Amino acid sequence: GEEVAQTPKHLVRGEGQKAKLYCAPIKGHSYVFWYQQVLKNEFKFLISFQNENVFDETGMPKERFSAKCLPNSPCSLEIQATKLEDSAVYFCASSPGGGARALPGYTFGSGTRLTVV
Amino acid sequence: AQKITQTQPGMFVQEKEAVTLDCTYDTSDPSYGLFWYKQPSSGEMIFLIYQGSYDQQNATEGRYSLNFQKARKSANLVISASQLGDSAMYFCAMRAFIQGAQKLVFGQGTRLTINP
Image (cartoon, rainbow over all chains, first blue to last red):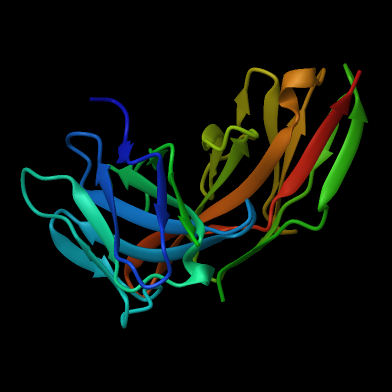
């Protein structure tokens, strides 16, 4: 389809519980990005994929966060043992890629609001 | 370092007036792209306009135009004839290639309020 589908829209977890978020990128897009937005302000880059391969994971707090993009499955972002500070909106975006001069075409999903209580 | 700076945390404008939202960027990469996104209170990210670093002309999309001044490293968004529905957060972002990987780098955002 022509939209990036993120599920669920809202997720509430008790501190210490696991949270798993899903993202179905636009068909044909090679790149998937995950961003964390806290308090509707700055976007923090977490991780990107080129197809099913991790492309850049410099933003990931690796001790609790993990992500995958497997063939024929939605991409996922998992947080083990959630903390209060993980409360945020998590956005997924996909892009066709193609290098520096390619048309950018980033499309964002509608986000998953994670609330840790 | 790749960085986007939006110096206006909040802007208040009268309906039908034009408004300029400021954005400056920092990059040593000769090839980059600049974006503006609108985020209404409902939370979704709406793409508004894009300017490539090699584009000779300023980008325009309906009521949106991008005042691209490469030497000054600024990419201000101009909204003409503002409407009540323009009230939202606005984010400037840059497509950067950092250590071979592309990503969007965002500014802090500007909250625009249109008064009737």
